Amino acid sequence: MVGGFVFDSLYFGRIDDLWNTQIVFLAYAGICLVSIPLLHFIEARGERTGRRPRWRGLLPIVTQFAFGGFWSGFLIFYARSASLDASWPFLLVLVAIFLGNEILSRYHDRLVFASILFFFALYSYAIFALPIYTHSIGTLTFIGSSVVATLVFALFTVLIRSLGRERFATDLFRMRAGAVGVLVLITLFYFTNILPPLPLSAKAVGVYHSIDRVEGRYQASEEIGRQSWQARAAAYLGRTPTLHIVAGDSAYAYSSIFAPTALSTIIIHRWQWLDRATGAWETRFALTYPITGGADGGYHGYSAIIPKVEGSWRVSIETSDRRVIARLPFTVQFVDVSPTLETVTLP
Image 1 (cartoon, rainbow, N blue to C red):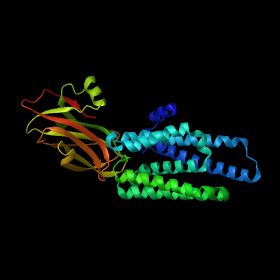
Image 2: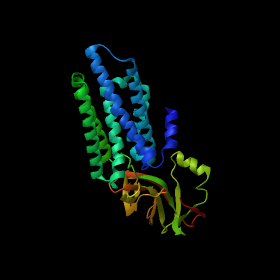
Image 3: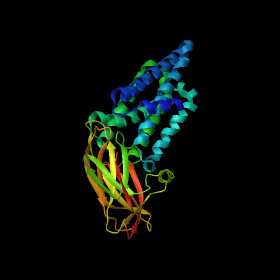
Image 4: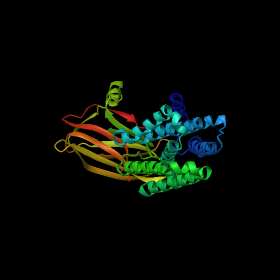
């Protein structure tokens, strides 16, 4: 399991790569479309004749391999796209299924269990595959992915039924109920902005004292020591950086967002301040700008405001349908003298 996950992490590149990504996912789907119905057919015929080939025991293993490939790829791409504080429930579901695929492997010969996992895989794949081919994201595209996944699963159930009608009849209700449960869960994740905004992902983000474009590259000014290992360790431990600024000066937020080739969409920089009295994040400024996909390093953009109050701030980088690509928490502290700054080139 660990080896396969490491291999996939190194093998998978861009999410819109046809051969290294899309063909692999389609191959996993093809394996499931063959192995699950074939095992069902063998078991259905065995109930009538009492004979089952010994090699049928390989089919659950093949199915498990395909599911393992699905969950590994989903974890890689959804984790790249997710903001942990917004999308952790969905990522937790993926991790649970990924581990369960290994721990509960003996249950893969059960039709209902395998079929529900297959629908989850179809749905999770359609969510980011359809925008790649339609060059658009948003609520209509998400609904389209729901329809595509449901239609493919319906054809899958028709195939299952044709290969073993009697055995299928006993499992039909549970298969449908499980699929509806998956549909409701992921739809709920989408409309509560928990679902990561694949196929978009943040390549680089940060908050700075200033940002300028110099000879085609973006350069920023930040406080000396922000790139030290101590500062990086503090960031990994959840400590937010402090921006020491003179009252009246600006703060800048930078983002480099990857999008698949030919996909055009809207990105929002939403600046928010935490009202300690109410515990609510108040939006103080929002900048909207269009991006076009295709560049390996992502589409660069930045915004700036003049903070009027000290305290906890964050910049939420979002899609047009309010899904969070990244969040940049920081603390504003006013000072009389501007701190010593250094210039860094942004990726």
